[in-house]
Image (cartoon, rainbow over all chains, first blue to last red; front, side, top):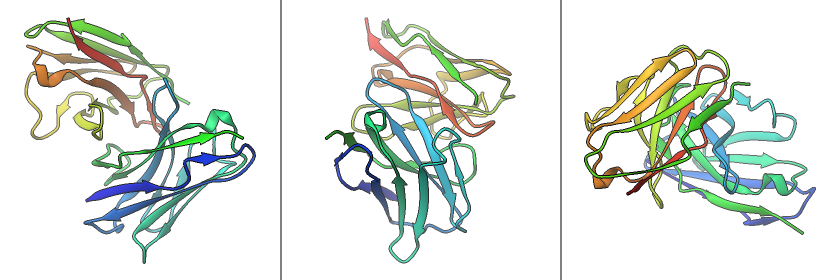
Length: 116
Length: 106
């Protein structure tokens, strides 16, 4: 399976960051799908996940601004993060995991910069 | 939330040496910890899960130990292919990650 993130590389402060993860070589079914990010010079941060049934769980520090959804027909997972600031500048990655434990597939990541 | 403190942030070692990396959790996480290896331009690779279980295909020179709040990744007989960044990942309560340790050649 391959995961590929896509979306704008530049977002203005206070706007909404929208990214898509396209899955090829496999189905969304029976897997969890997470979004993670890594700000420059910092460690990874888990944003949230969605199961193939649509159930979601979000990082408490981001949950008021985050929505993760599935597009099963397009084999895609979407991320929306509202009211962004410079602190949201990071490399955003999607990942697949068969359980709530370890990740078995990662995307390459996409850099999103928040700046006016 | 559970904070993971990983040390050192970088280290230099010679081929053949033993390397030890530590992660400390702010609260007990039982054995719900994984270690990944990350090389530039590639996705992270799972090395160890549940603190000490070696993922299939990972060389036996990698080992993990610990439970509760203190965890260790050990690389015995460091090889050139092991030069990479390593990070820990707790999955006891939500998910959090260590800051990473860059292993370089001395």
